[in-house]
Image 1 (cartoon, rainbow, N blue to C red):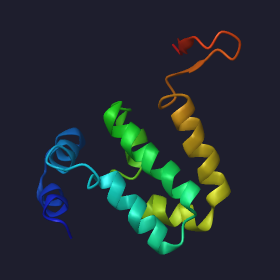
Image 2: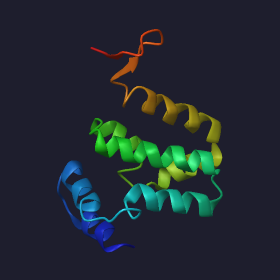
Image 3: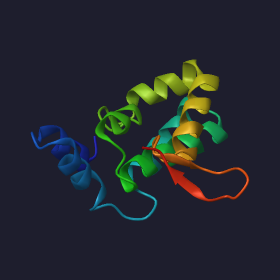
Image 4: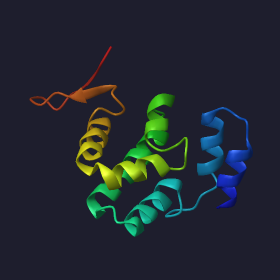
Length: 121
């Protein structure tokens, strides 16, 4: 287990503080989402779905999606649950993850005619 994962597990800090500890000390190519993608590929997840899972984990953190969505994107268990979902129900998670990305965590969407971003209330 990477030292930053062990430190975050030992922490009783709220999820955002634990996530910062996991992410802020990382180097390019060695972020939690990068490591998740590598593990997903090794476990047999398709390259397309592994890339989508990586993107969802990254965006959930970088765009500060609500805590429930961060947990659905693997931040509460270091991606173990989303790995199982990617392996066992890939079509379902592909659709779910793409929708999360398209709506920036269910916050809005682009108008198909104008391309303008419209936030949802």
